[in-house]
Each structure stands twice: as structure tokens, then as C-alpha cells.
Length: 421
Ligand SMILES: Nc1nc2c(c(=O)[nH]1)N[C@H]1C(S)=C(S)[C@@H](COP(=O)(O)O)O[C@H]1N2
Ligand SMILES: [Mo]
Image (cartoon, rainbow, N blue to C red):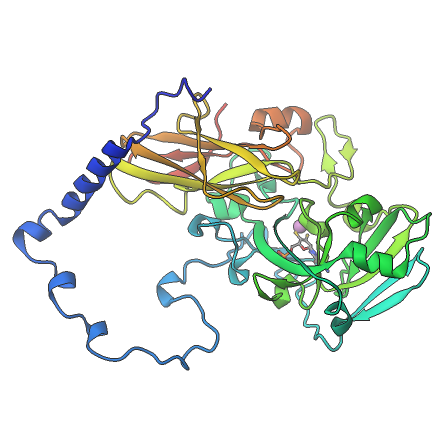
């Protein structure tokens, strides 16, 4: 498939030639007529002292980066308490999401719960019902893992047509952090699971409680009771002091402010797993228990909020890919709406159920592009087109939309959310 690609892939020689041309282009006029004062003059910032180390006990991004923030979609945000905002994935690089701009989803607002007031109960079909304080949790052996958390509703507004103009809005209900915590298995074994215990029901301390049932096999596998993210305490909005991390499974199951784990014989069939988080299919019936987030990817730049700001020549195309079934194996990128594909470069060894960053470095000829990316995971599963997904799911679904996204990049570098048929 890649061998048939005739697109403008940049060779090293072309790349260097292009870079030189751009350098010359940018300086033409400026260099010919007048020296660049940014180079020839001693600048203000070199004539006095900068801030001392006591100015910023806890750092915030520099003021030039105030654009890189969570945003919401006003018509979707009927009420800011029971709502969602989106990660600015169009403006980030690498794979780790800083907590300060990682999307939030609350059903009854973010609560403030101190470590001292924190309690975690394990009850139900166990030999010894237990209550842990925060200090108790800190005494169990810990693990660290990087995982993505994707809301099942991510890309959910795009079922019936291209709607939101920006990767932040179409794909920003996702974050990827390094978690530190205790395996749920360790705590369940401490309580002693009785043989009839086949599920756990997990709930949070907030008013919504966001209760969900998890089959015992998953609970004993890779689920973490986490208290640190990216090295520091969880932020309030992500469940301080303790949240559940359910790798690869829909974000709704990642219970924040985790307060109780009940071992049960069956699923509880709570609100969050019956009237919500079920999928309408093309024939009008509903599917429940869609837990795993299938392989998906998106080009984050260029994209509507991250247009091309230079002329023809070297262009970095980049994006994110992930799969709830394991590692990303490969990502292909198309600049012609899926007619031809080129294999992108993965920036680092793909992690298990974690975001992967991909790059495709091309020599852009300045013509318009229909930019797409297509992820394949280690199971061999390939991210579907919108048409393929609609055959099964129809137009009335909300959750689990992992279709291939298209950006129409114009000759002036601006990009728009479109569909190709
Ligand atoms: N206790 C509690 N846990 C919760 C929620 C909630 O409202 N209350 N929202 C869920 C949903 S729908 C998602 S997508 C994730 C979002 O996690 P985040 O806010 O850290 O991004 O948390 C889940 N856990
Ligand atoms: Mo969610």
C-alpha cells in the first residue's frame, strides 16, 4: 500500500534545500535592506535582571502560551456543573497531557476532598470488609504506568456530519498521564474475594457517585487505584486524592474521588451503564457493555486551530494514535482523502493503552490536501472510515465514534473539518 504512494515525501536533500530557501525567504528584504535588530541590538531582556527563583514557587505557562487552554463548546455546555471541556490537543506535542489542560468531565461538579477526610471502603462478597485511609493506601506496593483516558463521547458530535471545527473539539476528550497507584487486585486480595464475587461496583464520593460495574477479570488485571498523575498529586478536577484508572476502557469507568468498591455477583445496571453509555445501532437497537476504546487517531497539526503558517516546502504533519486493546502498531497518513497512504513515523516505542505520537515530514507543494490518519493496533484492527462505522451504528449514536477524521487544508494553509465520501 505504501509502495504505491506518489506523494511529495521529502528526501533529506530536498528538506535541506527547502530549509535554506525558507531561511533566505524569511530574511529577504530584511537582510538585504536593513540588519535585523533582534540580532544586532542588545535587547531589553539582556539589559537588566530576570525574576529570582522565589518569584514562582509553582510555575504556570508563560503568558505567550495563554491560548493553550481547555475550552468548551457552548451549546454542549448546558450547565457548567454537569459538563465537559476539551484538551487543546492541537497545540500540544509529545504524548503526556499536563494536568492543567487535561479535559474534565463531571456529572455533578468537581468536589474538594482532603486526604484526611478520604476513606475507601471495600464491601460486598469479601471475607473481610475493609476501610482504607489515604495513609493506608500509601503503604501498599505501588506501580507506575502511562495510560490514556478517553470519554466514550469523544467525537460523539460528529456522527451525523462534520460539525466542530477543531481537533480540540472533535477529539479533545482525551488525556494521557503517568499514574502512580496501587493495583486494585492488591486491595481486593487484602479483603479476600468470595467465590461468588464476579463483578465490582465502583463509586465516587461526589453527589453523582458515577457508579459503574466492572467484571472481576478486568478488576484483577490492570486497574489501578491511583493517587499521583505525572508525578504530582491528582488535581481536584481529576479526582483528588484518589481515582480509579481503568486502562483502555471508556473514561466513564475511571471513577474519581473513589469511595467504595462493592464485590457483587452481577452488574448493578446503574444509570451510567443503562440509560447512558450504551450505543444506538443502525437498526435502532442498543448495545451495552462497550467498554474498550477501539483504535483511533487524529492529525493534530495542521488542523483547523493549527493552520499552516508558511509557504510550500517542508511541512511537519503530526498527530496522536491510541488503542484500548494495547499498543499502536502503525499509523498511515493520507493527504488525498484516503486514496493513497504513507506510513507515518512513530516518535517513540508505543506504550500499552497509551497515546502514541506520529510524524510525517513532507515537502508540501502548496496545493490543497484532504488530510487523514489511520491507526492500526497490535491486534491487527484498523481504524474504520466514517462510512464503515455508520453501516453498523447509523447516525444516531453518541458514544464510541473512532472513525477516520478528515481535515481539508486549503492553499492558504487554513484547515476545515470535512467528510469525504
Ligand atoms: N466520581 C466521578 N467520577 C467520574 C465522573 C464523575 O462525574 N464523577 N465522570 C466520568 C467521566 S464521564 C469521564 S469521561 C472521566 C473524565 O475524567 P477527567 O475529568 O479526569 O478528565 O471521569 C469519569 N469519572
Ligand atoms: Mo465521559
